[in-house]
Figure 1 (spheres, rainbow, N blue to C red):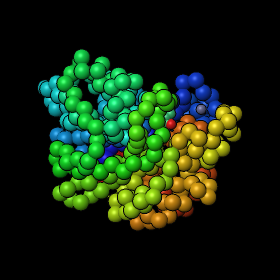
Figure 2: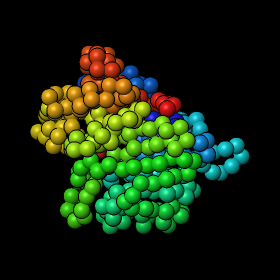
Figure 3: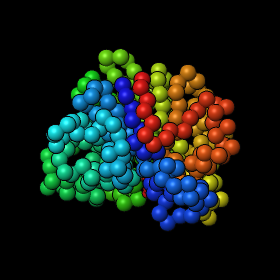
Length: 296
Ligand code: MLT
Ligand code: MN
Ligand code: ZN
């Protein structure tokens, strides 16, 4: 199984267009090589069958930069077969608009997300005018082209702000476990963890690689950096550090390659010179970077 990390920033990216906080300012000054695009993953088990997990607003440039995801010579086609949505957030769904030129994709989404993308943010109806994508409410394990199986684990009922009043039972946010049926290689992708639910450690057990929510270093980070009153948890993201942070949870999975993604632009880990990297390294945990390739 090949994982191509297309983007690793939370909504807004790094730097964010309207922000000159210390980490945004430093990234802006360093130039495009230091920037992060909004989080998205591509997974492939064969050259001609790739799936996206989430569809970032930065998808067009991400695909242009991804060897293996470009059209075969002389064709107007794509090795992309489909998209798995972990939730309905704008930074995970609006990239679907960038695929309207041709891809006939299978788009899988948790049932309430599938419903809200019909009724509240009507991407399903809009995109139907441009192509023949097939949309599927995800309510059972999937077996995809090339020998990739997908299990979804309900993480939380965190819903997008635009769907705050849309009445649909959860789960609104899921984690995906991706398994290559030929080799047994397995990865878990969970860029949005409002909670560490019962049974989640068992879901992670046995994976070769975990890519998890690294939005905020600390619960108070937004207050410290931007004056925002809400904590990381109030935004639906468990912080990395602290007694209930995800870094401690990851100690239960010592043999597994563990990486953080979906970093908010206020997160000190977006600064390559931050001492916080030493704290991660001491636990054997990494930060994913845009363009990273993982072969499992
Ligand atoms: C989130 O990850 O919490 C959302 O994407 C926030 C947003 O971009 O509105
Ligand atoms: Mn997000
Ligand atoms: Zn900023």
